[in-house]
Image (cartoon, rainbow over all chains, first blue to last red; front, side, top):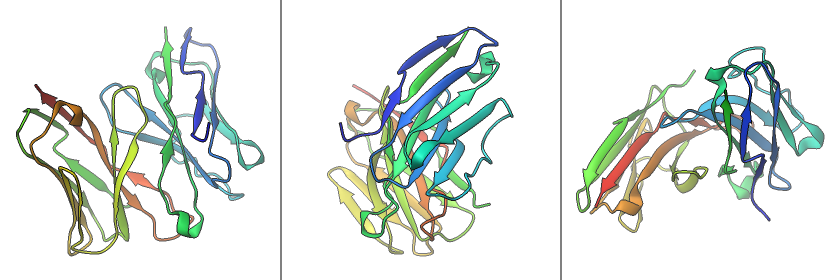
Length: 116
Length: 112
């Protein structure tokens, strides 16, 4: 498909385990964001990749969180030693960032993470 | 850091009522977007407003960009249960390498 794809859609993990969440953005989009959304809440910014620039990691809540974007495309968000407060929906968005294509953010459906 | 505040945070109304959601910034911004997120889905863009004083209409939704370019509003006429969702405003950065900044959102529930 042509949309943003996230996997897995649901993940249940035990407290203390590490998890990896994957985002496949729309081909050719240069900007990629990760957000966290707790139940009934707005979007909490985590990290932002723009082209080949250094990522903006200012939203990562702790050093247990990290993210990579390989080859300017696929991104992986890793949470180490998961805690119950990490339970949330993790959303990925990609943006064209090319002139006339505008700045619309295209979101995936998210990964629902539950830490038990 | 540019702050973006949305109000109200929660809104629960009956079908047929009108409502307005507000988005305010601490400083001037170049353009603003409104998104809607339905349960179980990611947010989807509704509109982008660019010019101060601009008004855009999308069926029963009316979007306004303040003259001073520091605020925006979303007005829904005759709300329907299908309008239920999270409404988010976002500041579009001036430069192509700036960060898209979202407000905290307004959760709207429209009861039949």
